[in-house]
Image (tube, rainbow, N blue to C red; front, side, top):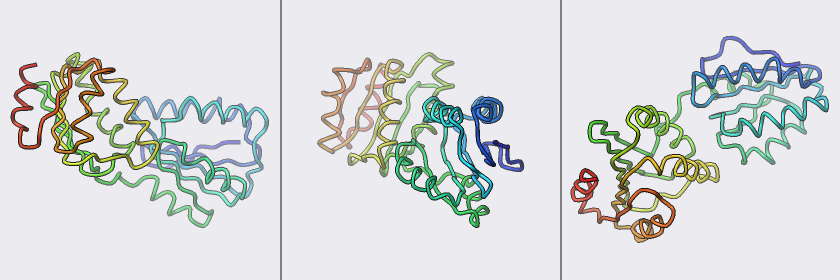
Length: 246
Protein backbone atom coordinates (compact mmCIF):
# COMPACT_ATOMS: atom_id res chain seq x y z
CA UNK A 1 0.00 0.00 0.00
CA UNK A 2 1.00 3.63 -0.41
CA UNK A 3 0.88 6.15 2.41
CA UNK A 4 1.51 9.88 2.31
CA UNK A 5 4.51 11.14 4.27
CA UNK A 6 3.54 14.23 6.32
CA UNK A 7 5.67 17.18 7.33
CA UNK A 8 7.27 17.90 3.95
CA UNK A 9 7.52 21.27 2.16
CA UNK A 10 4.53 22.33 0.06
CA UNK A 11 6.04 21.36 -3.29
CA UNK A 12 7.20 17.91 -2.15
CA UNK A 13 4.97 14.83 -2.41
CA UNK A 14 6.13 12.10 -0.03
CA UNK A 15 5.04 8.48 -0.46
CA UNK A 16 5.99 5.36 1.49
CA UNK A 17 5.33 1.92 0.02
CA UNK A 18 4.72 -1.09 2.27
CA UNK A 19 3.57 -4.60 1.41
CA UNK A 20 2.17 -4.98 -2.09
CA UNK A 21 1.34 -1.80 -4.02
CA UNK A 22 -1.81 -2.20 -6.10
CA UNK A 23 -3.82 -0.22 -8.64
CA UNK A 24 -6.09 1.17 -5.90
CA UNK A 25 -3.06 2.80 -4.22
CA UNK A 26 -2.39 4.84 -7.34
CA UNK A 27 -6.06 5.62 -7.88
CA UNK A 28 -6.86 6.59 -4.28
CA UNK A 29 -3.55 7.96 -2.97
CA UNK A 30 -0.87 8.91 -5.51
CA UNK A 31 -2.90 10.40 -8.35
CA UNK A 32 -5.14 12.69 -6.22
CA UNK A 33 -2.15 13.90 -4.18
CA UNK A 34 -0.04 14.55 -7.29
CA UNK A 35 -2.80 16.39 -9.13
CA UNK A 36 -3.39 18.56 -6.07
CA UNK A 37 0.32 19.49 -6.07
CA UNK A 38 0.21 20.30 -9.79
CA UNK A 39 -2.79 22.59 -9.33
CA UNK A 40 -0.58 24.81 -7.16
CA UNK A 41 2.84 24.23 -8.71
CA UNK A 42 4.06 23.92 -12.28
CA UNK A 43 6.20 20.92 -11.23
CA UNK A 44 6.31 18.81 -8.09
CA UNK A 45 9.07 16.99 -6.22
CA UNK A 46 8.74 13.39 -5.12
CA UNK A 47 10.17 11.55 -2.11
CA UNK A 48 9.46 7.85 -2.73
CA UNK A 49 10.36 5.49 0.12
CA UNK A 50 10.33 1.73 -0.49
CA UNK A 51 11.20 0.38 2.94
CA UNK A 52 12.04 -3.08 4.23
CA UNK A 53 8.35 -4.05 4.27
CA UNK A 54 7.89 -3.20 0.57
CA UNK A 55 6.98 -6.41 -1.30
CA UNK A 56 6.66 -5.23 -4.91
CA UNK A 57 3.70 -4.41 -7.14
CA UNK A 58 0.61 -6.32 -8.14
CA UNK A 59 -0.05 -6.64 -11.87
CA UNK A 60 -2.51 -3.77 -11.69
CA UNK A 61 -0.10 -1.70 -9.60
CA UNK A 62 2.68 -2.11 -12.14
CA UNK A 63 0.31 -1.05 -14.93
CA UNK A 64 -0.86 2.01 -13.00
CA UNK A 65 2.76 2.91 -12.24
CA UNK A 66 3.54 2.84 -15.97
CA UNK A 67 0.45 4.93 -16.81
CA UNK A 68 1.24 7.56 -14.18
CA UNK A 69 4.83 7.69 -15.42
CA UNK A 70 3.77 8.32 -19.02
CA UNK A 71 1.02 10.83 -18.21
CA UNK A 72 3.10 12.82 -15.72
CA UNK A 73 6.54 12.29 -17.28
CA UNK A 74 7.43 15.98 -17.02
CA UNK A 75 5.62 16.63 -13.72
CA UNK A 76 8.60 16.10 -11.43
CA UNK A 77 11.44 18.53 -10.89
CA UNK A 78 13.25 16.14 -8.52
CA UNK A 79 12.70 12.53 -7.49
CA UNK A 80 14.42 11.00 -4.46
CA UNK A 81 14.06 7.20 -4.27
CA UNK A 82 14.89 5.67 -0.87
CA UNK A 83 15.29 1.89 -0.88
CA UNK A 84 17.57 -1.09 -0.27
CA UNK A 85 15.93 -3.12 -3.05
CA UNK A 86 18.52 -4.18 -5.65
CA UNK A 87 16.00 -4.45 -8.48
CA UNK A 88 14.67 -0.94 -7.78
CA UNK A 89 18.23 0.44 -7.78
CA UNK A 90 18.97 -1.29 -11.08
CA UNK A 91 15.72 -0.07 -12.63
CA UNK A 92 16.25 3.55 -11.60
CA UNK A 93 19.89 3.52 -12.72
CA UNK A 94 18.89 2.06 -16.09
CA UNK A 95 15.96 4.35 -16.89
CA UNK A 96 16.33 7.38 -14.61
CA UNK A 97 18.01 9.33 -17.42
CA UNK A 98 14.72 9.33 -19.36
CA UNK A 99 12.90 11.33 -16.66
CA UNK A 100 12.99 15.09 -17.44
CA UNK A 101 14.20 16.05 -13.98
CA UNK A 102 16.80 15.11 -11.38
CA UNK A 103 16.62 11.57 -9.99
CA UNK A 104 18.77 10.38 -7.08
CA UNK A 105 18.93 7.09 -5.15
CA UNK A 106 19.41 6.81 -1.38
CA UNK A 107 19.69 3.88 1.01
CA UNK A 108 17.36 3.63 3.98
CA UNK A 109 20.09 5.08 6.20
CA UNK A 110 20.11 8.14 3.94
CA UNK A 111 16.51 9.18 4.62
CA UNK A 112 17.46 12.52 6.18
CA UNK A 113 19.79 13.31 3.29
CA UNK A 114 17.05 12.41 0.80
CA UNK A 115 14.54 14.70 2.53
CA UNK A 116 17.02 17.58 2.50
CA UNK A 117 17.99 17.06 -1.14
CA UNK A 118 14.46 16.79 -2.52
CA UNK A 119 13.40 19.97 -0.67
CA UNK A 120 16.42 22.21 -1.19
CA UNK A 121 16.00 25.37 -3.34
CA UNK A 122 17.13 25.03 -6.96
CA UNK A 123 20.60 26.28 -7.80
CA UNK A 124 20.93 29.63 -9.51
CA UNK A 125 20.25 29.18 -13.19
CA UNK A 126 22.68 29.99 -15.99
CA UNK A 127 19.73 31.23 -18.06
CA UNK A 128 19.16 34.89 -17.20
CA UNK A 129 16.07 36.61 -18.52
CA UNK A 130 14.29 39.95 -18.35
CA UNK A 131 10.62 40.40 -19.25
CA UNK A 132 9.88 44.02 -20.23
CA UNK A 133 6.15 43.87 -19.86
CA UNK A 134 5.37 47.41 -21.06
CA UNK A 135 7.32 46.85 -24.28
CA UNK A 136 6.26 43.24 -24.72
CA UNK A 137 9.88 42.12 -25.08
CA UNK A 138 11.67 39.15 -23.47
CA UNK A 139 15.48 39.17 -23.30
CA UNK A 140 17.28 35.85 -22.74
CA UNK A 141 20.98 35.54 -21.90
CA UNK A 142 22.23 31.95 -21.54
CA UNK A 143 25.61 31.89 -19.76
CA UNK A 144 26.10 28.15 -19.51
CA UNK A 145 24.58 24.85 -20.63
CA UNK A 146 20.79 24.93 -20.70
CA UNK A 147 18.92 22.71 -18.23
CA UNK A 148 15.35 21.41 -18.24
CA UNK A 149 14.58 23.49 -15.14
CA UNK A 150 15.52 26.68 -17.03
CA UNK A 151 12.51 26.29 -19.31
CA UNK A 152 10.17 25.43 -16.46
CA UNK A 153 11.26 28.55 -14.59
CA UNK A 154 10.96 30.66 -17.74
CA UNK A 155 7.50 29.31 -18.52
CA UNK A 156 6.28 30.01 -14.98
CA UNK A 157 7.28 33.66 -15.44
CA UNK A 158 6.24 34.10 -19.06
CA UNK A 159 2.97 32.17 -19.39
CA UNK A 160 0.82 34.38 -17.10
CA UNK A 161 1.96 37.43 -19.10
CA UNK A 162 1.18 35.72 -22.42
CA UNK A 163 -2.27 34.67 -21.21
CA UNK A 164 -3.03 38.26 -20.21
CA UNK A 165 -1.47 40.06 -23.19
CA UNK A 166 -1.92 37.56 -26.00
CA UNK A 167 1.73 37.48 -27.03
CA UNK A 168 5.16 39.09 -27.20
CA UNK A 169 6.25 41.83 -29.57
CA UNK A 170 9.73 40.37 -29.57
CA UNK A 171 12.25 37.94 -28.13
CA UNK A 172 15.97 38.76 -27.99
CA UNK A 173 18.53 36.02 -27.34
CA UNK A 174 21.98 37.35 -26.42
CA UNK A 175 24.83 34.82 -26.35
CA UNK A 176 28.49 35.04 -27.29
CA UNK A 177 28.64 31.29 -27.84
CA UNK A 178 26.19 28.48 -28.48
CA UNK A 179 25.42 27.26 -24.94
CA UNK A 180 24.35 23.68 -25.66
CA UNK A 181 22.25 21.51 -23.35
CA UNK A 182 23.08 19.83 -20.06
CA UNK A 183 21.36 16.56 -21.04
CA UNK A 184 18.64 15.04 -23.21
CA UNK A 185 15.92 16.28 -20.85
CA UNK A 186 17.13 19.86 -21.38
CA UNK A 187 17.05 19.47 -25.16
CA UNK A 188 13.54 17.97 -24.99
CA UNK A 189 12.31 20.80 -22.75
CA UNK A 190 13.79 23.36 -25.15
CA UNK A 191 12.04 21.83 -28.16
CA UNK A 192 8.74 21.67 -26.27
CA UNK A 193 9.07 25.28 -25.11
CA UNK A 194 9.66 26.50 -28.68
CA UNK A 195 6.75 24.44 -30.01
CA UNK A 196 4.35 25.81 -27.39
CA UNK A 197 5.37 29.48 -27.61
CA UNK A 198 6.68 30.45 -31.05
CA UNK A 199 3.23 31.33 -32.45
CA UNK A 200 2.84 33.99 -29.74
CA UNK A 201 5.98 35.95 -30.68
CA UNK A 202 6.19 38.42 -33.58
CA UNK A 203 9.94 38.86 -33.94
CA UNK A 204 13.05 37.04 -32.69
CA UNK A 205 16.47 38.70 -32.62
CA UNK A 206 19.56 36.50 -32.22
CA UNK A 207 22.44 38.65 -30.96
CA UNK A 208 25.70 36.76 -31.25
CA UNK A 209 29.04 36.51 -33.03
CA UNK A 210 28.84 32.71 -32.90
CA UNK A 211 28.48 31.26 -36.39
CA UNK A 212 26.05 28.54 -35.27
CA UNK A 213 23.74 30.98 -33.52
CA UNK A 214 23.99 33.54 -36.30
CA UNK A 215 22.82 30.91 -38.79
CA UNK A 216 19.75 29.98 -36.75
CA UNK A 217 17.41 32.65 -38.19
CA UNK A 218 17.83 31.23 -41.72
CA UNK A 219 16.99 27.75 -40.45
CA UNK A 220 14.25 28.85 -38.05
CA UNK A 221 12.38 30.84 -40.70
CA UNK A 222 11.26 27.53 -42.21
CA UNK A 223 9.23 26.38 -39.20
CA UNK A 224 8.71 29.41 -36.93
CA UNK A 225 5.76 31.77 -37.13
CA UNK A 226 7.89 34.60 -35.74
CA UNK A 227 10.15 36.71 -37.97
CA UNK A 228 13.79 35.95 -37.02
CA UNK A 229 16.90 38.07 -37.65
CA UNK A 230 20.57 37.81 -36.64
CA UNK A 231 22.63 40.70 -35.20
CA UNK A 232 26.26 40.98 -34.13
CA UNK A 233 27.07 41.44 -30.44
CA UNK A 234 27.96 45.08 -31.06
CA UNK A 235 24.51 45.67 -32.57
CA UNK A 236 22.45 44.84 -29.49
CA UNK A 237 20.75 48.26 -29.43
CA UNK A 238 19.90 47.96 -33.11
CA UNK A 239 18.36 44.55 -32.41
CA UNK A 240 16.28 45.99 -29.57
CA UNK A 241 15.06 48.82 -31.80
CA UNK A 242 14.07 46.34 -34.51
CA UNK A 243 12.02 44.38 -31.98
CA UNK A 244 10.31 47.52 -30.72
CA UNK A 245 9.30 48.41 -34.27
CA UNK A 246 7.57 45.07 -34.48
